[in-house]
Structures are given as structure tokens and as C-alpha cells.
Length: 314
Image (tube, rainbow, N blue to C red; front, side, top):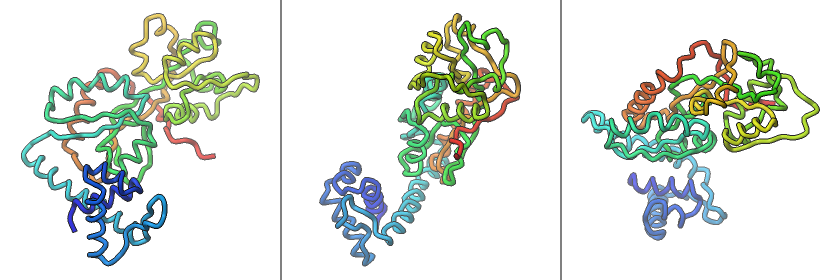
């Protein structure tokens, strides 16, 4: 059997369809099917149950897929070893970034990185945390930037920085006159939240789990952008919390509505995450170093309390 044949097996296992797997592998469907059949004949077993729709792995097929992932990863590592020996930092690198980090962090480091490492072809996608975890585990991302800790067995995390939460409080609100606020000052029922699926939203809910509740709330608003939440707050519909880096670009009139928390400031931990097999670790290290250099002067808070992005178990 060959590495190429094992890649075909992994493609069918992922897409559960021979035609789609062939398209993803840039071969014809008969070619892919023939190569997989050769492996099955060589081993004397069936990897896939073709009688089911969609196609399913057999029990032994699942074990073969698990081992195939290890073999393909180790084969890819050979090129990594050669590249590192030569001091070469280049090639395709697939990076995922969560939506609440991408708009602020990416412009800070991207230009520096591509100038310093012009031979790296960065392919960047905005993805939520669940999508990132799935793609990292499936080998469709090389690394990602997300709020941590994630407690994923197969994923390694390197902390880049700690980013405090900052309250956006419109004039007329009871907390507007305060120079600093505390978590107990928050009312969860009046905080405007991002849509479900954003880990920053889960962080706020975790932060506010012991905060006061208002049973007289007549509406619930969730949005996909901080800009919308800010506008809604200005209309008197509540308050919101923002990540610190996002506040740096606000207009002066909006800056006046920001209130920092007393120390220890609630904050999120932002990390560079990647599979524990550490493929393309030389590019990962270059990315970490570049980001650390640009955020060093932007985030100077030390006394922080990390708020988990994981949803609290009920």
C-alpha cells in the first residue's frame, strides 16, 4: 500500500462519498475506487460498508483509518525535518482565527509576517471554535488562534496574550458615573450578547453566572458583531462587554463610555493552538514570535483573572 492510497481512504472516511472524495483528491472517481479496492484486496478485509448511505466504515475500517492518520502525518513530518534542517520557512500554511479575534489581531501582525516570511503562503479562515477543533483534528488546519483553555486531548496550546474584558456603558446608565466597575455591577439580563456559537459570548455568560438578574427584562438581543451591540447600547437597550483590543479603534466619543474592571481584571486567554504532532512547527514558531512582538506593547495588563471560553456544564 502507498501513502497516496491511505490519503484516498481518509478522504472517503471524511466525506462518506467516493465521488466527493475523488474531487477533493483531484482524481477521477474510478481511480480512487480502484486504489481503495486494491488496499482491501491486499489486506483481505472491507474498509467501507458500501451498502449503507452514506458510506460507513466497518469496525476494522475505523481502526485502519486511525492508523492511516498517524502514517500520513508521519510521512508529512519528513518534509518538515528537511525544511528545518535547511532553515527553510515556507510552503502552504492553513490558519484559522475565531471571529472575535480576527478583525483586531490579524491587521496587527499579518503585514509583518508576510514581509519577514515571504515564502509562506498563508491561507487564513475565520471560523468558530468548534469548527477550528474539527479541522485541526481532521488535518485541514495547521494551526489556529482562539480563546483558551479548550481542554482538547489532541491539541496543544501556546498562550500569546491575555486580553481583558471592557464594559461599554452608555450615558444615563447607573454604572456610567463609575470610574471602574466590578463583576457584581453587571446585570446579565441587560447585557447585549454575541450570537450563540461565539466563545466570547460563553466567556461573558461564565463571567456573569453569579451576577444579578432582572426578571423585568422584556427582550433579548443577540448580534453577530460588536459594532451592532455598541449601536444598540447607544440606543439605550443595554450595555455590552468588548475585548480590549477592539476598544482601541473606537472613536473618542465612544471611548468615553468604556469602563475597565477593577483588578484582577476579567480577561480571556488567547493562544496559538495546533495538533500535538507539531507538523510545520517551524512556521508555528515563526507565527508565535511575530504575534508576540506586535502585541507586547498593546496589552500591558498583568493582574488578570482568566475567564474560561468553555460553556458551563448544567
